[in-house]
Every structure is written in C-alpha cells, then in structure tokens.
Length: 351
Image (cartoon, rainbow, N blue to C red; front, side, top):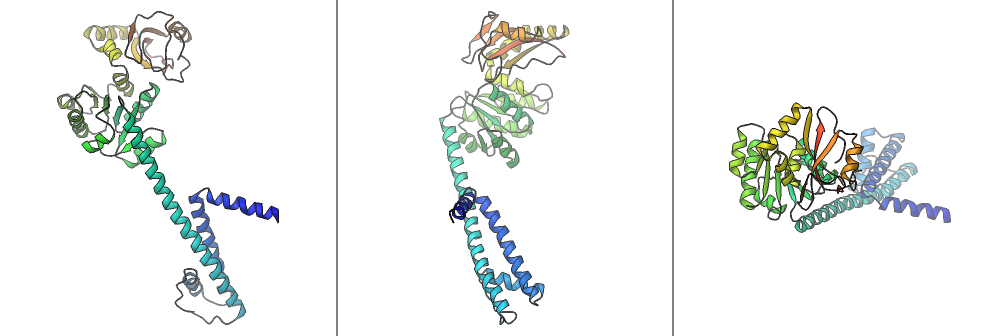
C-alpha cells in the first residue's frame, strides 16, 4: 500500500513539473480512450463510423442520442466506461491546455519585464541592429571584450537565435524611433547598424543620430555608393563586409583609440601596407575573460605564440593606451592588444 502511494505521488509530481508534458499526456490518454471505446462498439456489431461518432459525442458530453439501442449489458458497460474515462480525460486535457497557455503567457510577461528592467539599468552600452551573419559575429566579439550590448532584431527566427545565444534581445524594427528608445539609445555609447539592407541602415543612422547626438554610429554598407549617404546621415564610421569583418566593427566600438592608432593616420596606414609587403599584418584583438592569456604578461604571451606575435600596444578597458609597453605589463581581460603577426598563418587565439 505504501509503495503504491509513493508511486502515485511520484507520478503526480512528474505531471505537475511540466505543462507541456501534461498536455501531451492528456492527448495520448484521450486517443487511447477513444480508440478503445470505438473498437469495443465495433466488436459488438456497430460500424466504424457509427462507433467513432457515438464515442465523440459521448466523451464531449454532447449526447445527441443513441444511434443504436444500448440495451445489452456489454453495450451499457462500454458506454458507462466511455463516459467516466472520456469525461475525466477531457477535464484533464482542458486543464492542461489552460495551464500550458497561462504559464507560457506568465513566462513571456516575466521575461519581457526582466529584459526591460535590465535595459533600463544599462548605460554606455552598445546597440546591435540586425542579428544576421555580421551581427552574430559582432555580438560574439563584444561579448569576448566584456562590453554590454543589446540586440535589436525584427526577424522572428533570428530573434530566437539571439535569445538562445544568451544575448539581451528585443524584437522590433530598428527604423522605428520608439523601438530605439526601448533599447536605451539615449544612454548608449555606440550603435552598430548591420542590417543587410542599405536603405534601412541609412534610415536607422538618421533616426539614431537624431535621438543621440553623442552616439558613436558604425554602419554597414553593401554598395560603395551608400557609404557617402551613411556618413551624411550621421555615421561616424562605415564598414563594407567585402573589405572588413565583424572584428573590425568590434574594435571601433571597444577600442576606438587603439583603432585610431592602427589605421587612423596616413603614417599608420603606410606602415600597415609596408608590413604586408614583408608578410606581416597589424591587428587588434580583444582578450576574453576565459582566455589563457588574461592575466599573463606580454613577455609570456609572445613566448607562447612562439615568435609569431609581437605586441606593440595595449588599450585598457578604461581607455588608457600603452604604446611600446614593457614586457612585464600584464594583459587584462577586456584589453585590446595591438599585435604584429605573420601573414598567411593562423593568429594565436587571444580573444
């Protein structure tokens, strides 16, 4: 007796843990009851159509009347069992459906409220408009650099992909000023418009610049002719995916001073071209919190890279730039490290 009571208690707990499980269990139960009762009536001489119809109107308590006389003991037993089991199943299934819908709505409400609270607390964050290929890589780079950001995506599938990736995500049209207000554009420090549509990027840039005059805006351009339009609309920088990747956008956001150091002058651009002729590249890399080099010295980092990396500058999270740093300088998580690497070779993983 005790064992059966314990089994029943475990079954009830198992059912209560998941509304979706209750719904599936209720559907399976009703299928079994309807199929069993129909088969029982057929075995007693009824046609499949009459048996199924009579079972349905019985379990749903409609009761239009008996198609055939229910006069024998067998038929009355089948009918009584169908009423008891079927009505119980319908009550359970209805309750499970209500529970499933209610809990889903509550979870959605709480999730939306929690997200709004998080956004309201954010300041100096980055807004990513668009979670396509570039937006996904950009989010990963910003996450590695320890930068707070919120993703703004209209497409339902990409919205869910961003949420599944653990990103703070709002579903909405980035060209709508109300939506931009909802992601805290007034307190944001940067916005990356990487929607795969030049017209949308121009409109987003215009709206963002109108809402925040101090905002750093980096916009994506597919057609070369769009670059001038984006700059006129208020973009601080324009990137073309065919020439520059998501890592460069992240560098402009996280390490604006270091990015200026690497290619913000004719001298540095000339240096970069000269390095490439020698088989070298000038790069800026973000140091992730879980990187094995976070907390290591520059000397150690260069030693681990076996001579394929030479650190020439470090940009701290607080904006301080260390040029010609001492080998004993410690690399911290979130730093931007300017390095010279060998072209054509895989860069040692720092970020």
